[in-house]
Image (tube, rainbow, N blue to C red):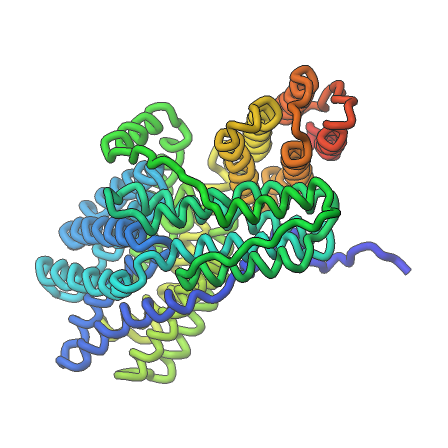
Length: 633
């Protein structure tokens, strides 16, 4: 019997594209989205003017679309920035909407500006997207007949309402997000130590890396703005920092294929519950008398957690410095300008198509192009396909609602369901998000313009045309869009791992903080590398095929990093510096071979027993790099 895959099997890029992230449903975000969008509509029905309710709900939409987990101050900055940028874009759209030429010029300029703003960071990227989206929506609001100042005022009131909903629990849950982040580290550490096999342990270690990154991001963000009253945050940050020794020992133990004693798992889960409840940590168990060095290191790490660290307060980065860094990135980063040019070019094409073809609501065409081509949101191809699939599903849902004549309070309930779906889609899959955003906008448009089935069909036609413009002009015909580029990212990550090798194997044990920071940077770089590869693996192009080919190398780099951590935990003395240089030279050769698309040259590796594990993993990484042929990836 043949064991070959049948011809009708789905290609790998389609499977990856449709895969939903296995994350829990964020019920708190769902509830906030429902309240933010439905209460304004309920007010509109109550006062007998649904146009007012629709515009209030539109003002609440930027915060719903920009919502994310994290500390309250971080979320306040993110949501306020997104809402403010959306209001600015909406105002520009309202002013230029009556003139086809003026609105087209404004939308193209705002598209380019939003792409440039994205280089300033995650929050700026979200703000730039909302500015563009609501500039486009604002150009279509002149059809409602509402005066500009009234429309903008209602939008701002809706935005203020959404911020109140999002941040209302700040007063009595101030440190809750940070406590959850620290407790999550203990839970993931326990999961890794109790993994039954290597594959499960590898996944758990990746999740532990993500939890550690999230914990440090949240706590350092929280402390960056506190002055003289940060005792709770300082305690949590010291607690997280003290976990480093246990994490290193756990990684080393798992790397040897061993599992931790049950009392260690129990301690970690109990410690997580204590952190969540803001209670003292339990007493750490003592190592058994016959424990080996690896197990003793793990127990000593648990004792270290109970003692805590005393981290010094860092100097916060000033807004002026951040502005200078952003300006510097624009000057030295041609990729940002190319992304802005591509977005502006495709948006201009969408405006031209909307002018040449008599579309009922052509602004949706432009909106689709901007959403799909957002320069820092992953694969253009993947977003275009998911946007199309999601919109078809969303149009079907919206058409059914309109066809059955859903009106009044039933419509408010239906919009609430779609708002909750948007919150779920944001964390699960872009196609799911599109499937719920589309009927949400369709029904809101129906409320404000008394639309019928034509609203749904117009959304479908505009979205298909927009995705076609993106795929043809922004992807297939755009220079370099399908050129393999993930190899450079992989080589950069090897450089970060090489720096960890140097810090871990040449820095004395007393300077544990420097070594710990280098380890975190290495694992963070590998986590970011996985994310970048997952974004392009959905493409049926050489770029996607290269990502699939290089995927085993990422696992090889992770094993090299784990092996170095094992040496740090188990070895008291530093290795011979000459042997460390051999490891660094080998990693440098791997990076050079990937960048130059050639076979790596065989390099000498350490022969001592102390670095035998590291040498084995580096050798395995060489084998993984030799897997794909350089001239075909």
